[in-house]
Image (cartoon, rainbow, N blue to C red; front, side, top):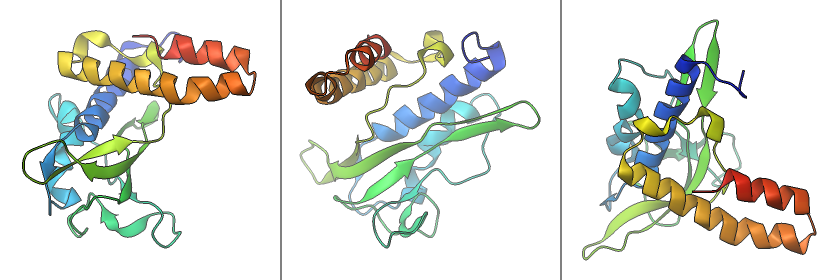
Length: 179
C-alpha cells in the first residue's frame, strides 16, 4: 500500500515526520535533559489525539548497547551535551492495521546563538518516503527544514554515488530529494 497510501497511514506518517522535524530543528538551552524536549516529537500526533507508547530516542555509541543509557529522551536521562549521539524516533501504531516509525541519528551540536544553546544535526542522511507525506499538513518552517535536509543529502551522498559510478542510485537520490 505504500505506492498508493490510504489517508490514515499517510496522515500518521506525516504527523510522525512533523514530530521528527520539530525535535530535530529544536534549539534549546545547554543543560537541558532529553525528557524536557521530548514533547516536541509528540505534538503533531497529540494535536489529533494520537500518541506512541515507546521512547522517542536513545543514546548511541557509549557502551555499544542497543539502547545506550544515560542519553535519551526519558525523564531519567542526563542533560544533553554537545558531542552526544542520539536517535530521534517518533512513531505511531494502529493495532491490526499499520505501524510507522521514522528513526534518524542525530549529533547534539552547539546552536548558532548568542548564549550557549544546543540543537541537533541529523547525520543519517536518508530521504523520507515522498508518497507518504501530506504536504498540506506541514508548516512553512517544516518544509524549509525538509528542503535544507534534502540539499544536504544531495551534497554529501550524491558525489559518493557518482564516485562509485552508481548512476541508477544517484538518479533515485535526485528524485527522492527534490524540493
